[in-house]
Length: 391
Image (cartoon, rainbow, N blue to C red; front, side, top):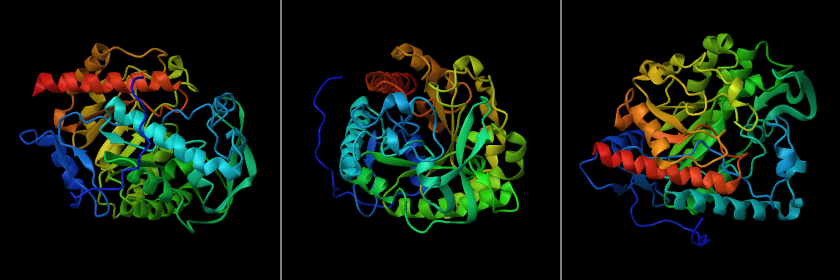
């Protein structure tokens, strides 16, 4: 990595207009105007990409070794809290997380990422921080279930009515918005996935539980939009773990969670973190994908590079923008620009350029930071290369 990391905070700018769903679709398609336009929210200036093939990340970025015990983190994707993974005492933890978040944001910006996140630096996993913050969820006295791997896994218990009594990720979004003038995305765990990661001891069935989680997610998402989120993403990897159940009510729960959101929305699914799920065990196709065409989300995000997915399945999502995984996070080396460019070109065989957003396969949480940065830089350079070819 070259160049110093900048630590100043960006508080906003003069170009302030509404940023709605339609605006993002225009940024992908309108290539006859300037490459970039200032599209902001009422409280800040935001540079939304107007060029084709805008790049983004799925969500997480590597947390530094001085912040977390990476050896402990690598053992699982926790569903209950894992406070012992943090290296700093509570009195200094928030400040340290803030500093590490700025590092993550600056890395994404320097790598050329168009739509950045906060790296999910404050989270122990993609889902446990939000899920366990809700009333009705008991994470202090977890249930033990047998995971698909055969290991015993502690999960939170749902013991009373699910209620969101206050914001969970609001400060995260405010901090991200204050510290970047790039388009900003924030992620939330999806309601179907959370319903599968907890033991239901209160609701009559899993559908009722999922819909309760959906109401909580919706309330949070509405607050995140007000705080300046330009894109809101739901992580729903468990729809492919239990496709029969997902077909019954996953789309209904997702649409409830996204109700009333006016910024672009994404549903992400994958086969699991490469560091946790070996590539040799990943299937070559999704057992639940075409059904997502019925969601209200504008974008569907899929892992494709590591499992060498047959992209013909994307024909079933012709009405959606595709956030396509073009970085194999199971490969410990930084891919060449040409390798990533070939993956983008392959995607363009099935998806028009104005509907394709290059991204990593999944979150980069478990990777060494120099490798994660190198992969993002290769992806940005590859997108620029293909963009030049087709313009």
